[in-house]
Image (cartoon, rainbow, N blue to C red; front, side, top):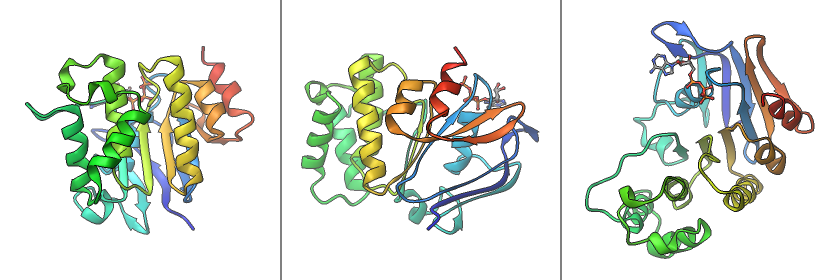
Length: 226
Ligand SMILES: Nc1ncnc2c1ncn2[C@@H]1O[C@H](COP(=O)(O)OP(=O)(O)OP(=O)(O)O)[C@@H](O)[C@H]1O
């Protein structure tokens, strides 16, 4: 079964492509990493997959339909964490997460939130305002926002950013568990250890084209960017 299908996809801005045309199919339980040096279009690709910008050409289909983030049916099944953050004033970390969970129909939103806060190691920050968190704590919080809600497709842009080594290990375990549970995971990364630990296939973007690598060779290719 195909959950996400990119076909002849070209992404970019103002009519100018930022990466080569690409095609990719992702099934439930698949983990796919998008890799490439800075500026090769990874974030732009993920934004397009999330329906936040239109393709220049080609198609992005999720769950058998063209992606459209205005459709609730799409939003309820797709959890995305990009490199941006915006918070409601006067709403704590825990309250943000409970609101997110409730908004997506989670019945025991408080209990789920407390489990995820604990899992992400930020239970001690539950009552804090998001803007008072350290950058790594804020990253943990943003990742938590994807984990408190239902999801069939998880899209993460460099989820390892600003996380300490132990939390990067936890992140790898989490992504593997997500895939094992049947969630499709698509993430951009610069971390070859995260890539190896998740066992993800890697889509390598470069001037030479978009190439799907085997899990065995992908971490070596990524490490070679250093
Ligand atoms: N809003 C925008 N308008 C125009 N060009 C943009 C915009 N955002 C990004 N770009 C350009 O698109 C190209 C790809 O950027 P993108 O952020 O997708 O790369 P990336 O692979 O995610 O990079 P990095 O590894 O540095 O995060 C870059 O040349 C960038 O300057």
